[in-house]
Image 1 (tube, one colour):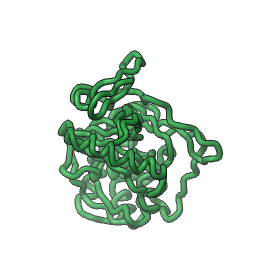
Image 2 (cartoon, rainbow, N blue to C red):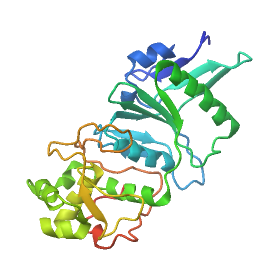
Image 3 (tube, one colour):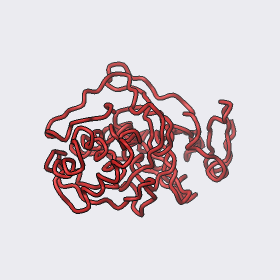
Length: 293
């Protein structure tokens, strides 16, 4: 194998055939967000979570996920209004080290942004995950991305409470949770001013019917509330920055908005093993909950 100077990219074409190309050329021409994984996520015996699929509200398609840590990062990306596409392990990067030995790395996550730039990322469960090899690869991949105006990051795990709140709202990301015609407008009117969650839900109608639509709006940022404390029936819900009835539009800050809801019937991540969701601290806010993520 001759990879020449600089970085090379290996990916699968639409027919499933491996293609090797100069990294700078591939980054310009290849829609990595549409590609299958270049290699499968490993299955590690004894781990509670294994590879699965995340249904993306941004794209209406499934994204391969290799771990629970990656799944949570996919949720964050899926809720980011700047993200227009995502893929799991779509590209392998090749380069030579100082001793001219061939090195390679497959970042876990690819995200395309509305401005055409992209993010390659890994999703370690803790800062030292992967050991020295992963940290050295991170430096190389970061340099490869910087050369073309992209970014690379090792994404830090979310804190427990924001992660739990995000999982909860993700259960309502599918468009079917908007409910009957007119319900979304009634929900937005009920929260035209900040008020406790349950009060606004009762003002819009039967909470059993209304709460799924409220959580859907919170996922898509047509309504907003803080996610740093556990969601509960008295949490204050306010008008969001994206209140268009036809769906959200890109906001300015990455990782602080909503992906557009698009329709595919599968809603959750399909894991290798189940993951029990906790309803603690949510009270009546849990009424009418959608599928577990």
